[in-house]
Length: 132
Image (tube, one colour):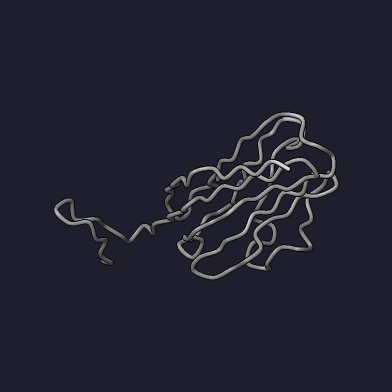
């Protein structure tokens, strides 16, 4: 089995945006036994999305993400394992991990999602964000 760990990425979005995409693209034509799992690991562990046996397994995701996630098209054929999160909230901010496993390969990526509220401002002279 081949193990591949991909470097971390950062995604930023504003609260109230229609959606945000957590990107993860890999090789085309993944085996049919591939399982894809998206999890939020920080600040609190939650199962965000699961894809297995050719379909989304929404009954296995945390209630917080129910009806708010999707994977487009045919991820096993296209290799696009990106996750779309609908109506991102400040509470969605955190560290996300996607891993895919099959009989031949294991791949994993970590993404830091930062969702900012509309009442936040950043002082250009500082690296901190202040609430108004």
